[in-house]
Image (cartoon, rainbow, N blue to C red; front, side, top):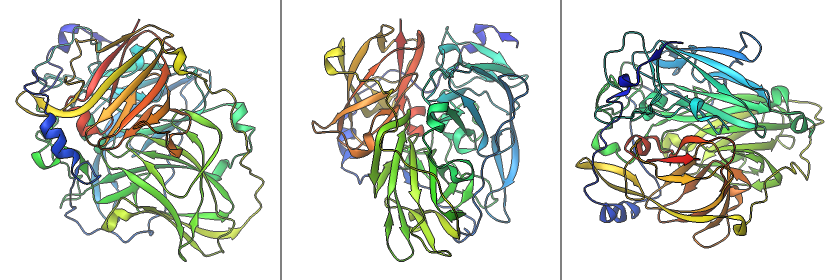
Amino acid sequence: MSEVSRRRALGIGGALGLVAATGLSAAAAMARRPAVTGAELRSAVPLPPPYQVPLPIPATLEPVGEGRYEIVQRETTAEILPGIRTRLWTYAGTFPGPTIESRRGRPITVTHRNELPVPTVVHLHGGRTPAASDGYPTDLVLPKGWTGHGGHGMHDHRAVVTELTRDYTFPLDQRPTLLWYHDHRMDFTAPAIWRGLAGLHLVRDDAEEALGLPAGRRELPLMIADRAFAADGGLLYPSLDPALRERPGVTEPYLAGVLGDVILVNGAPWPVQEVDAARYRLRVLNASNARHYELEAVTDDGRRLDLVQVGADQGLLAAPVVHRLLPIAPAERYDLVVDFRGVPVGGRVRLLNRLGSGRTKDVMAFRVARRAADDSRVPAVLSTDLPAWRRSDAVRVRDLAFRTGRVHGGHGWLIGGLPFDPARADVTTGLGDVEVWRLVADVHHPVHLHLVGFRVLSRSGGPPLPHDARLKDTVSLRPGESVEIITRFDGYRGRYLFHCHNAEHEDMAMMANLEIT
């Protein structure tokens, strides 16, 4: 792998000048809006009816050697809407990218080769990863012969930039769970994910497999993402610079976030999956840039099915939690079991979004095709290895506000009143320290911490909500809400991030540095 001089990292940042104002009045105005953050794009092509396209299952990536994988990032065209070709940026030529299946405690190395027209960065979301492989947003992989900047105006002398390829090493010393990998290039994360740079990564272990949860073809990964389509079939997105070379950001109506009018699951519009009359395990990821969902499974005769949660972002719960409605914010993952045994053969179960309107109310459907034997189960005890941090363990408490504000004379999104600056250490903590963070929001902000999982202690002074169960790495702050979390900063020393995972907010400066010493 060729190392490029750190001088090549000059100019990597984006439109992140000095803060002109805290923007509290603007934040207050935005907080009075309805509980939807973002504006919706409208597709310019005819959209297919729901529940006609079969659900695709992403292919599993095959290793090229012991613990070694290779992925080429490249442009391609694919049929997402029936009969229409759409240009995509992809991992290995597919959207979603290929799924990586790994075992707890068995390190792997993934070599990424960038054949796209712009720099990229890969982040394994939810991974306990050394800083050098975590995908810091200025640690770019440049395309061959790149002569542009990564953004415009901000220097990062610590950036490690490579040309064409980069090895990412993942120790995977963590609980079994669903992770996902996506682009994390500074100032251009949102349009890169929108164009297709996202894929799943499953971590497994023997103890989880011994539980008897639904497995094999009755375990379904579901990457939910909204998109919109232009008249030529391409993906519609309101970038200020459609080439994604120099000028970051989106046009003014979409500063709060970009929503699409087509709901994709595993890259297919409103798909349908044929199932047995049996239990299924659904590994659900919200890979949308800004759209929140409230999921509900409903039969055609109006009966709700239980969504039995067995896991969260960072793995199995201690015990199952039953939901009828399940909110899921961008980047959150839920591990669910749904029982189709009470649905008659030929019956249909729709997965609906109660926060949607029009076509975005529909997500996908399951059609029960046959009776079948089912020896799966959902044990009363799922896991006993969860950390038991207490408030009294915390060596410090931090207050962090996520609010709109002014950045470089324009609109931005700030943490603690400041825009992202890779040269500034926003939070410095010691390896092994336990801390309580108190987070407060103006509008919806799904807050993600790199490296560590955390537990939600409270919401606005009250108890956590049922979907806050156990260990998470992304928590959804609702408008005007405060949330307390507790975590232990263990694993590795180095420079990491925490940020809002509304991808447009992230690109407009709502990130901060976390230094673990």
